[in-house]
Each structure stands twice: as C-alpha cells, then as structure tokens.
Amino acid sequence: MDKKRILIVDDDTDLSFIISEMLDGCGYESVRAESAEEAFDILSHKSFHLILLDINLPDSVGFDICRQLREVSDVPVIFASARTAEDDRITSFDIGGDDYLPKPYSMKELLSRINALIRRAYGQSGDSRLSFGDIVIDTAARTVTRRGGRITLAQREFDLLEYLCRNRNTAIPKDKLLSEVWGAFSGVEPSTLAVHIRWLREKLEDDPADPKYIKTVWRLGYMLEVDE
Image (cartoon, rainbow, N blue to C red; front, side, top):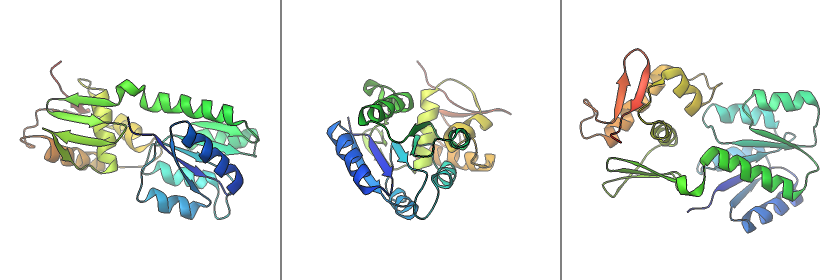
C-alpha cells in the first residue's frame, strides 16, 4: 500500500526535522513547511492524508490556515502548539481541527495520535481498495480505474466518489454530502454538488443521462446504487 503523506507546518526547523525523521522511519512520507505561504504552495500541487499544524507561524496563525483549508479539503488536522489555553483548544475544534497536542510533547505520543487519526480517517490497510461494477478505487493512492484504465478525477470528485462508495445503497441528503465532503463550514452551495455529480457521471457512467450507479434521490440527495 502507498505511504500516507503528512505535511508538517512549523517554523521550528529543528523540531520539524526530528518529527519528519521519525515519521519517515515509521512508514510515512513527510514534507515540511515553515510558513503558511510555503504550506499553501505545497498543497496547491500535492495532496496529503494528514497535516500537523503549529498555531504561531511567522506569516499567519494556524487557525487561519485551518479555516482556509476547510473551504477546500477535509484532510485531518492535528494542531500542535505551545499555546495551551482552553480557548485555543476550543477554537481549534470549532474551526475543523481533529486533535490538539500541546507542546512540549513526546515523539511517542505524537506518533500514537497520528496513527489513531489515520486509522479513523482512512480505515485499516485492508480497506484501501473499494470497488463497484467495473470501477476500482484505491483510497491510499487516490486513484480510480475503470475496466483497467485510469480515470482522472479532481480532488473533490475523488472525495465525493469515495464517500458515496463507502455509503453505497444509502440515500444521502445533499446537506450531509456537502458537510462530509466539503466541510461543515465550507459554505459550498448545493449547485456545486450537482456539478460534481454530473462530472462523476460523465467519467464513470456508460450513459450519464441515465446513470446506472450514481442515482438522484428525489427531493433528498444522491445514492450510489450497487447490486450486492
């Protein structure tokens, strides 16, 4: 299975180097960024499975980064900071953070938190491949194939397809899809969801106008319908 990728955003270069070495030695692939600008530049051309985010950065505050991130991604975020006030912890969760680890912390505890969050977010290794009909989804490599041929999906298209596949044969309301795939605070309109559904149908269905799999549930939402 492909390695899970972790982005470390921290201006403490010595600490981030130690964390990176530890993660790489434990089977992860890590990338480091020392500022918000560098982090967003990296995120613009590479996807990650988890982000370890400091709050105090030279050009921004970690909270602002998380808010912007949640507009386009649901990637798990662990805040790691010397700021330990209760208000900071509450804010981190309110804006979409998944965990909060106060500094100083041990590498053992950090690794345990990362492992636990990766398991919750992506399941066990045996659950990395999903399929229906002639379509295979590799959630670790974030690839989709149809009849053995590679299908190119944008990040949000992939996330939407994966969520529908994990909840197959279940009618999912539009607002739940928007919350789960785009983020609870994204402010994305239902029309955006409809466009992404249309794009998925065009790429995956034999007849997008009469879809076999990705069905519209009248006045509710959508469902991936698969014969078990």
